[in-house]
Amino acid sequence: MQSQERPFRSASGEPLALRRRQHSASCRELALRRPRLQLRSLSAVTSAVWLAAYGVFVLSENSMVLSAAIFITLVGLIIYLHFVKIDQESLLVIGSLGIQLTSSYASGKESTTFIEMSRVKDVVINEAIYMQKVIYYLCILLKDPQDPQGVSEVVPLFQSSQPRLDCLMEVYKSCQEILDQRKEAPQSSGIK
Image (cartoon, rainbow, N blue to C red; front, side):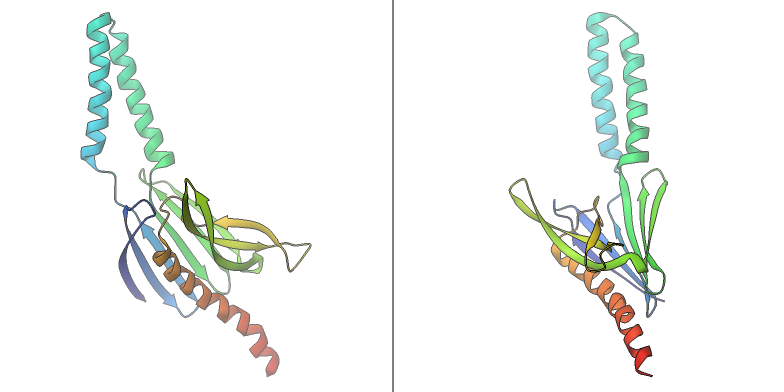
């Protein structure tokens, strides 16, 4: 199993690390890691909220303000870590089976989606205009069951990390190598 890791940047300039593992000729795992939550920034936000609550407490002399601030901060932190902050997004492409998408949250929770290869039409890099900027994103085009030439759904990849085009190109090429093997397999078996 070959494994390599390269540094990249997100569309917003945040550092990313792309780890590429080749399990076999038709199986690759591509994972984008973002920096972990820094204790310094977490402490700063918590301190700011608690200081503001203390200021309100001093003015109003109501202890419920402090209790509410602590409760809201803790609940907000749990929600942020469990549902918002994604540390890693990975793409496992297995030529004969399909594509598995996994998002790993800061709390340790993982969200996984599997797309059968028979439903995959192609993997493409798309572009969108967002806030006067052109951003690029990788997506999977799913076949339309009624129209084999049509597309029924577009599944965007790496939505949280939003890597720049240079990183997307590397992931795209890796996916296309496996998809091309799948496209060539039926043709070569018919020649024999």
